[in-house]
Length: 113
Image 1 (spheres, rainbow, N blue to C red):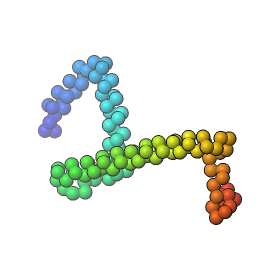
Image 2 (tube, one colour):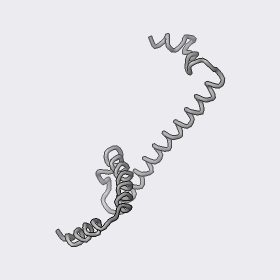
Image 3 (cartoon, rainbow, N blue to C red):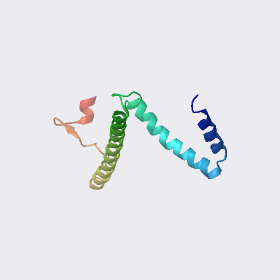
Image 4 (cartoon, one colour):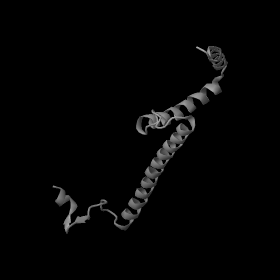
């Protein structure tokens, strides 16, 4: 292998790590590997769409943007659903949410059955 001396230097440097460096690396690896795995398996980052380093950089930026927007939309939806539930339950205490929902004049539970 061409870069074998560099690999040996990196291994020797890692062997000199203390407890704090090992803790930081474990935390970093836990956070970054999950994100990279999701990007590769769910968002097409495992294969380059176009050739070239610049095109791959653009693809990785777009993939990261898609993942971030997806997480932002999920957080926004959760936030508004919690607010809606709290407002709805304040207006109608003692009733379950959705108990008086109707579709074509009939309760929804009757239309489903």
